[in-house]
Structures are given as C-alpha cells and as structure tokens.
Image 1 (cartoon, helix red, strand yellow):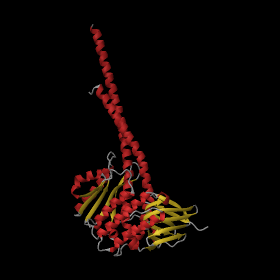
Image 2 (cartoon, chains in turn yellow, cyan; image 1 turned 120 degrees about the horizontal axis):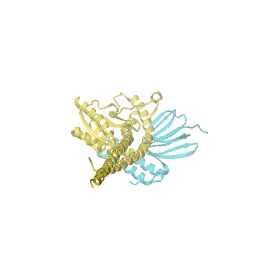
Image 3 (tube, one colour; image 1 turned 180 degrees about the horizontal axis):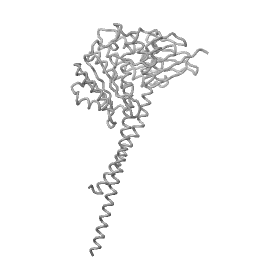
Image 4 (cartoon, chains in turn yellow, purple; image 1 turned 30 degrees about the vertical axis):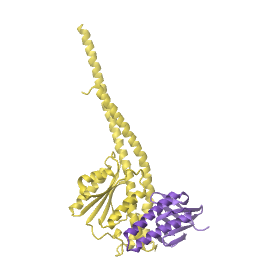
Length: 293
Length: 142
C-alpha cells in the first residue's frame, strides 16, 4: 500500500503530464490547420501539372524517344525506396505505419531477388529502417531545421534522387508517405515516381481531346518537365505528411490527455480511501486508549 | 470591350492569381507571346521573365521562372516553379535566383565538357535572368 505522500506525488506528476499532453494537443491542432492550408494551396498546381503531364505522356508515351524518366530504364532490378517520415515522435502510429508499409515492400523485393536501396527523409524513419535494412540505406535527408516545408526542400531531395538516377544507381523509385484523409485517418501510401506515373482525375477526357501545339517540341517539354514532376510529387508527399503528422499527434495527445484524466480520477479515489483509513485508524486508537484508562 | 477568359497563375506553394483577363503576355522559352481570348491551344515552357496580365481591373505583372503555360479553350493556366508579383520582387530574390543560375552554369561546364547542349542551356538561363533583371530594374550581379 503506497503511503499518502506517495499517492499525492503520483497525482501531481500525472497532472503535470496531462498539462503537457493537453498543450501538445493544442499546438498540434494549430499546426494542423496551417499544414492543411499548405497542402490545399499546393493542390491546384499538382492537379494541373499532372493533368498536363498525363496528356503529354499519353501522346509521347510508347515512342522510342520517350525520356527514361517516363519509360524507365527497361529493367526493374535495382529498386529505390524513398521513405518520408517525421522528425519528431509522439505522434501515435504515424511513423510506424509508413515504415511498416515500406518494410513490407522491401521484404517482398528482396524475396524476388531485386537489389534494394533506401533513402530516408526524417529522423524517425531512418531509425526504424536502420534496424532491419541498415545495409541498404544509401542516404538520409535531414529536415530538422526546416520549420516550414517549402518547395525548395522538395527540389533539393529531387535533385539528389535525379542525380542518382542519371548515374544509373537505380531503375525504379517509389515514394512512401502518409496521405491525409482526416484527423483520425491517415493512409500510408506508396507512389512510384520513377518511371513517372501520373494519376489523372476527372480531367482526363478533355486533356486528351484537345490537340495542343507544343512549343518547343513535345519531347523537349517532357524532358524539361519530368524532373519537375519528381519534385512536385515529393513536395506534395511532404505536405501530406506534414498534415498527417499533426493530425496523428493531435489524436494521440487527445488520447493521452484522456488517459491521464482517468488515471487522476482513480488515484484520487485511492488517495481519499487511504486518508479515510488513516483517520479511522487514529480514531480507533484514541477510543481504545481512552477505554483503557 | 475585348473578350475575357479565365486566367490562373499557380506556384507549388500557392495560387497567385485566378481572374478574368483580356490578354496575357507569356515569356515563352522560344520567345514572348501574347495570348488573347480564343487563342489556339498551346503548351509552352517558360523562361525567366515578366508575365503581364491585362484584365478588366487593370494590369498585373508577375515575375516567373521555370514551369509552363497551358493555353486551352477553358482559359490560360501558368504553372511556375517560382512566381512573385513584380512589386514584391527584391534584390535579395534576384541575387538568390542569379546564384542558382550561376551554380547550374558552372556545374554544366564541369559535367558536360564535350557536349555544348546543356552548357548553352545554362548560359541562356543566366542571360535570361540578366535580361529579366534589366527589365524590372534590379541589377543582376555577375
């Protein structure tokens, strides 16, 4: 049986923990709003870009002159996994879910006899990937100092990946990140960026039916835009991840706050019971002492 | 009054403009072009330069680099990797962009010693930057 003093200390410490998790929840909520806005602001660009690229890719598509970024190197022997995660923990299963998906893919590729390379963005992903696939890590991008993810950050990562591709270090690159659905749902997603695949939504119909003039040639435009496509995909991955991270942290901290509240209730009941027991004990001692006289 | 059409200018980070316009001057990779309503569908890449939008509410100038413009029956969308209203453009931005272009140029010179193509491209990018600087009245320090 813990003493009254111990119980009191426990309650105090849980109370301050609750204050911290509550504060973190509120901070995450504020950051989530900003992250969501950023993700939404980038959407028009990504959508238009993908629509145009889908049209271009369809018209150049299978010809021999198609750039390697679009048609691939003709093999899928060496696979690069780009794992985007957060720099900080305490956000529930956010990082674990992304890493789990990436690890599944990694095991499958290794079982198929493919060569595997991994590039991580975000400290948490690197730490988790290192445990099982330490030998396959070829690089890490640190965004700890970046307060607000900008397009320039995505460009930096894209440049790194593209120079590795040009050097023939890999054939296929896949991006792993978490898609933001809502505060409680984030979907870990794998998206192939090299060779490029463009998801084109409702606009496909008229993108194909309009015949565009291209200036300069289609090939030249495609060659110019494909590297930008990699950066765009990474940028939208980073932004989705940012929103997902804050959403996951918010619900994780909400749970923690609620748990702390329950714990305080239980401890308070225990504390009151023991206090009552002490009082009753004292009374019995006084009464029996008085009777003995 | 001239016919208007929908004009959108978006950068990866935000949407800068979405208005009705009567004519748009696009700094295309192969030369400037002015597009008005019912222009033939064209997709062109951009060079660093000034984009002029004329609309019912007056003229707006934007500094754009990298990206492309899509002219279709639905209107004109310009997707620029970097875009700023001309008034917000400062010497710092200019220096930063110039720096990038210079890096690209020296890298191209290193990597492609026997191929003039990429080096020329990078040199053109730099020249475009300087020309753009002159146009908006900022000096491009070399």
